[in-house]
Amino acid sequence: MSLGIDLAVAFRGAVMARLAATVEPGAVLSVIGPSGAGKSTLLLAIAGLLERPFTVSGTVRLDGEDLSTLPPERRRMGLMFQDALLYPHMSVLQNVLFAVPRRDNGHRLGRNERRARAEANLARVGMADAAARDPDTLSGGQKSRVALARTLASAPRALLLDEPFSALDPALRAQVRGIVFDLARQDGLPVVMVSHDPADAEAAGGEIVEIRPCQQGGWS
Ligand SMILES: Nc1ncnc2c1ncn2[C@@H]1O[C@H](COP(=O)(O)OP(=O)(O)OP(=O)(O)O)[C@@H](O)[C@H]1O
Image 1 (cartoon, rainbow, N blue to C red):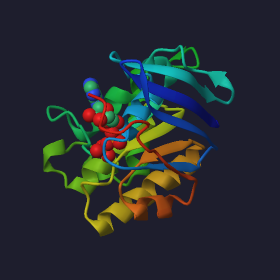
Image 2 (cartoon, helix red, strand yellow):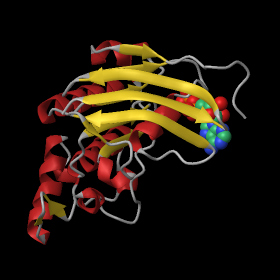
Image 3 (cartoon, rainbow, N blue to C red):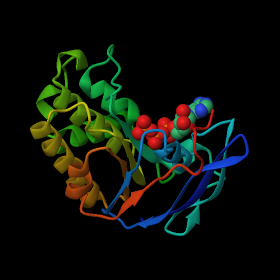
């Protein structure tokens, strides 16, 4: 799937951020820029999650199909944030299983099939042995890997990453980042990554776009 983005986001009618880029399957578009420039807002716009007082114009295309009128759940974008946002009352496996869709290409997935998908994705991130653990007992890097397994298990068509590695120390950051990029490549998923760390963009090896505020003095 290639992801074509040509978007402008307005805040109370005034355009605050724009992004135009094409991301090929497995490639990473790095989005950088000053704090408050609108990077996170643009990611939410791609996912279809921006609400009033923001308005979004333009298109988001996956292999040419325009998603811009679809609700978020039908766009099927895999989002990852700095916080792994795991449910504390569920085991690691249950967290991943929760994300596995109930249907695939019109065919209903049974309980065992869904569980197998969750386990396979935990194995891909090297966390199969932690299936029964409580998320609160995991390290930061392990939580990030489970969050990645959960995102991949949701059968996304692209990945949108908002500072997903910034809570990790540099060595761990490089490790988790490597896993994310490798698996995105394996699955042919285009990736849009917002990051403050030049090392992230360098490791991504793809196009780098700098977002600049369209107005001076903030938006509120
Ligand atoms: N719900 C909201 N209502 C009003 N203003 C908002 C809202 N959400 C974000 N903003 C404003 O929109 C602008 C862009 O915010 P955004 O979080 O997209 O920036 P960013 O580039 O991701 O910044 P950072 O690098 O600090 O995370 C900021 O000025 C912010 O204050």
